[in-house]
Image (cartoon, rainbow, N blue to C red; front, side):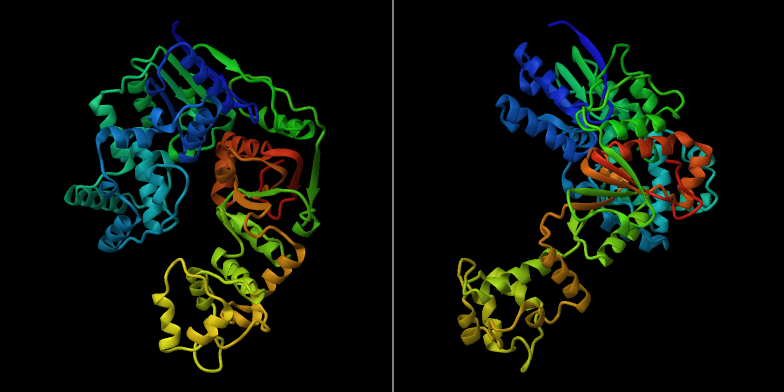
Length: 509
C-alpha cells in the first residue's frame, strides 16, 4: 500500500464524516485490519458516530475497532487508569472548600478538564490553568497574555498549588495528565492508518499527542475546517491543523446549506484573515433568510427549529421567552417539561383508562401527590406497602385504592390529582398537550452556538447579541466571532432567521 498523508477541508454539510468512513473502507479493502486503524475524534459523540457508521456501512463489529476513540479515551486506556483515579467535580468542590474559592460544575460532550468547570470563581481560575497546559505555556505567561485583571495571579498560584497537591496526595490524575503521560511514554499503538476528525479543534498539547500517534501509520488523514475552529477558549491550535500535511483536498459540495444561507455565510467567512482558501457550493435549493424584531414574530408553529445564542445567558433568555409563549423545547438535551413530570401525567391517564401500571410508574405518580387524609393519597402501612411490590407487578387503580392508600379515583383529572405539580408547570403542560407537540422529543432546540456545532435543523434562529466579554474579544480579535457566527448560520437546512440585536453589543450579520 502506498503512503498517503492528506488534509481534508470540509466546509459545512459537505460530508466530512462520510468521507472518513469511505477512506476507512478503502484501508480495509486494501488489507489493513480494522484493529490497526485509529480514528480519533474531539467529542465522545463524534467518536461513537464514527464507530457506528463504519460498523453499519461495512459490517464490522465494534469490538474490532479498538482505536475509534477520543484522544483522552485512548490515553486513558493506554495508561491503564481507573475511573476512580480521574479528577471530577466532587474533587474540585473539596479543593474549593479547603482554600475558600468556590467551584460550580457542568457537563458537556467534550472530554477535557474544561468539562467539569462551571462559572464560579474557582472554575474561572482553573480554566486559565488548563488553558496554559493546553497551549503548553507557563502559567505566568498565560496570565500575562490574557491580561485578565479579574484573576489575581497570587490567588491563582495558590489554587493551582492546592490542586496539584490534592492530586498527589489522593493519587488522582486529570485529563491533561493523561495526555502528558502518553506523550512522555512515547509508545504509540501499532497502527497502520490514522484518521483525525474535527482536527481544527485540537489544542497544542493534543497535537503533541498526535505527533506520537503518527510515527508509524502509512495512511494519515486529517479532517476539519479552519473556518469552523471555534474552540480557541480551550486552546485549539488551528495553525497546527493547517500545517498537518502538504496535500489538501476541499470537499466542495454542501448537502445541507441552501443558496440564500450560503450567501450569508460567504459574507461572514470572507472577513477572516489568513484562512485557507476554499470554494464550495450550496445545495440546489433557494432557502430563505428572514429578520425578526421579537421572538413572537418567529413562525415556531411548524417544522424543526434550533435557536442559538452566543452565551448560556442569552440562550436561557430565549428559552424562557418561548416557554412564556407556550412552546415545548429542549435545552442541553433536556425537554422543557421534565421527564418525570410528564411520565406521571401519562401514567395517571393510563390508570384513568383502566390500564394497570408498574410499581415504578406508581411510585413516580405518588411523588407528585400530597400525603395525609383528605388529600390524594394516605400515609401509613397501606401506602408503605408499595415498597414491597414485585418490580414485574402490574397495579390497577382499584388495587391501589384497596391496598396502597390511594384516596381518589379516575374521575379526577391529572392536574388536580397530581397536586404537587406547580400551577405554572400545569398550565404549560396543558398548552403543550393542546398543541399536540412532541413532549418527549421537542422539535425546538435552544442552545449556545458552541453546543450546536455539528448539528443542523430545517429552521435556524441566530441571535447576534454578544456578552460584554465576547464583544470585547470581537473588537480585538474579530476572527473568533466570524468563525462562531459562520458555524451558527451554516446549521441551516432550509430557512435562516436572524433576530435583530437588542443591545449595542452585537455581531454584524
